[in-house]
Image 1 (tube, one colour):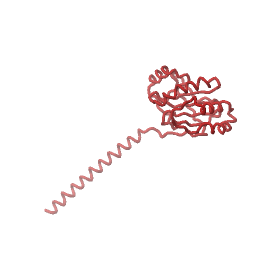
Image 2 (cartoon, helix red, strand yellow):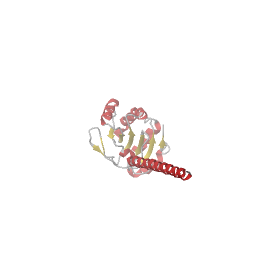
Image 3 (cartoon, one colour):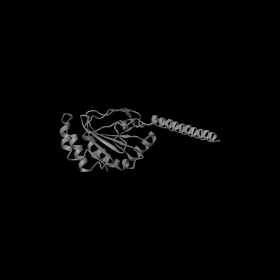
Image 4 (cartoon, rainbow, N blue to C red):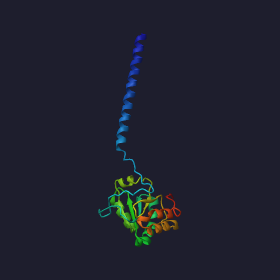
Length: 206
């Protein structure tokens, strides 16, 4: 009788161990499948590094790359992002004031649907260049995940400032920084960086 009970108990333990093994194997399989579907790890564009080039379409599907030898405000945003909407009027005002002096504003949208983007640009009358990063590849390339994020790029192609959060683009510290960058040649970009460091923080969040 005791031998029978012992065998039955052993069988129950064996069956339970088998079930746990199957459950753990299933969890491991699901975890592996989820891991394979995760997006690539974001890159990183730090102050002083050369801004990565890219090719992205505008609203007419014409491809554009990062301009060379220009002072650039590169902005990553989305139509569904309230802080992004908040800063558009002052960014438009910045464009109107400094575009004649050579400032290039490029707003890269990470919206999935181009129709949403086109309707938004028409409604807000955005006067600067708007490009579409539908799959988020360029956004990840720049390490962007908190929208909006902006990069101020000097004539030598190097990032002078990485700005996180909605900005009031017509505030005096910002406009003085832009003016200093516009007045500097690509061969004297380091001097401009030294000059503007006292005007605007390299990392800014609102």
